[in-house]
Image (cartoon, rainbow, N blue to C red; front, side, top):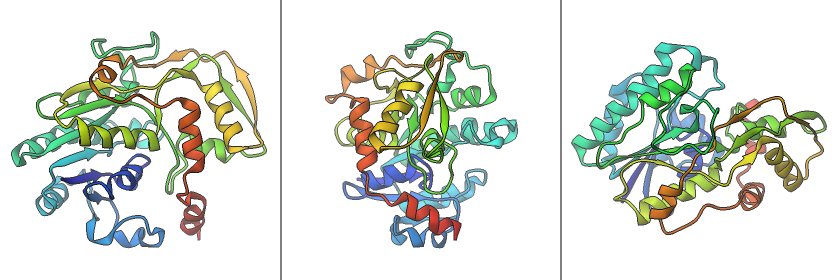
Length: 296
């Protein structure tokens, strides 16, 4: 089976490349050239398609025609932490329109699209959202991601959320937290989260491809809800970091997802938070070395 991972340099995309490369005939797209990543020894030059800019859909079409994938995993998106997430032209083009154009391309070629959406399609006022709950996001990011969700057969949209290590950027929770070694941060006790590490989600997606390729529609995929404070404490303790965490009850937000529908169909279970953080800490991918290479 031939897999094409879009957005290979991103937080989830590079973990999917790692998870899939020894189990499938896996290809990956990146926005820049392969030479910009050659020093990392991460991607296979023969299976990396560089210069794919989703704002220039012709570059996507050319990559698709060459690879001729059976399954496409869309990890491309404007994330909430970037300034461009506030630009409606960019956000709507990448988060909303591109997935639908990609789905049409996949349908015409007889390929299956697995599209990754987010818990941010919800406001966080309620918690334990099901697939039947109406999206009530009030910001551009959440609305743009909702508009980009794909539900037609044979494609699959997974609503979820991720934390994890990054190749170059430091925009996510984990890299931000690791950068505060020796410092003090706030831990929000009333901010509830039910996502995954990228390592865990990549494995879940890989198992879906291997064992449940006929799964189609929109599904929530979530872990046991945990407060951001408890999550940071767990990361600190397992990574053995010297960081003071000050519990803060002032932020109230609960975007936890009810994924009972998904777990009732698949024949495996979500890992626990201690297991996910332990696996992330044990990951031998040399992120710190790569960051030093990038900075040099």
